[in-house]
Image (tube, rainbow, N blue to C red; front, side, top):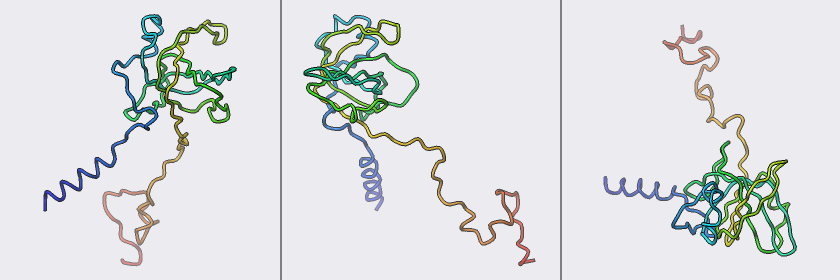
Length: 181
């Protein structure tokens, strides 16, 4: 019987494991960061990367679309973590037209591809060097709403026969309801 319980618990944990989507499941053998590539971009041309982050700009060109992305650390499933720090910026170069209404500013994107070149473009008045990734696979993540008030289970007061008499809980002792004195 204990083997059955062990098997059921094991299957529960295996079912909770998250895998990356198929389009971004290929993980390069060397995990390069945007900062490493920006330090010496010529050395890493044609290197495979899997990067992700938040979209800041979408620019459609004649035969391709450049998506500017603020780099974020990726989780085990390939999803960019929502954090305040950045590893730099990069440009994801998609073949053809990508609708700016779909690839909307603020959405999270993960791409797999090879580093194609470097481009210097302004961010405000600062000239910034972007590594350009020729995208072979990408995945847009669903936006999860920010929870201002967590969805707690129903309060203990719904299950208590005398909810208002001894609120706020906990008391060091359980008071007696006036009807039972």
